[in-house]
Length: 428
Image (cartoon, rainbow, N blue to C red):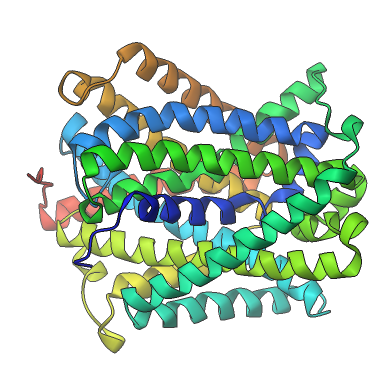
């Protein structure tokens, strides 16, 4: 892309991805974990995201590279096994997110089509939606961008109608948070899982080379996107939790928001929100597949991933596109929605931790108060530990998959370095 994007273009990238991450695809999961405290969960997760964004904003304003966090880490801790493994892990975060969106899409599509949610039917929908957007990516950046603009516009319109009509019938008692010992623990668990909801702000740094005046617009886009999405999350959650009894929200876990529209919009509301959900999750899947393939290509071009990811194959597309799509489908088939969400959150948090460590070392060069960086580092570490405990208690397969992903990336990097003798170079 030779044309630079402005501030609002950068914001739209992040907002389009973040909104698809939780509001439609894992909303029912949040209701099951946090109950009536769910609106507060989004406020809490947004606060943690802003702490991490503080480092991304300072680093992104000074270090302009589409490699984003990997370039930050390379500058901060230098080349080595950890940095190389994190470059692989960074790509895997996109793979796991694709799985999350594909499963969320199937969760809304099957009831809308009045098709039973069997394993085969779910697999066919997941495979079809991933294959469809893989084909769209073959048409190039222009086609992807035009499709994204249309889809994002539709989903924002649907959410606006949902909030505007549903606020008037909210039951205040249903959205009043409680902080008993058990409920506080559940709220913290939900905040750890829903931290994934804000992962889209990092995409801004992965597009910094294509943003006008990145030294000014990258920090602004990061902060504004988080604030905008937090407001949307809280409003939508207030309407959903405040209009539908909690047991019904939990029962309709995979399509909870559509069920929440029934009390004030009836069957038409269910149809409207279901269609909005499909468009919303599709836009997030489209952006994530495109971003994951492009980042794989960029990292491979710079030697941070194997050359296979930049090698052109069918239809002159990088093999990284096909590998990203196929592995994303594999995660979608292998794990449930809860497991995929928690795995994605854990992987993102590991990347964030190393970005924060790098900012601590580079603070004198790029700016930032070390006290704030230290607070963010401690907070993300605690959230990560909470998530590990939650995985162990509720989904052992997700726990072992998380650590298998982390350890596997180190093993792959060690073998790759041994075979190729590759090193990573800081770009100017």
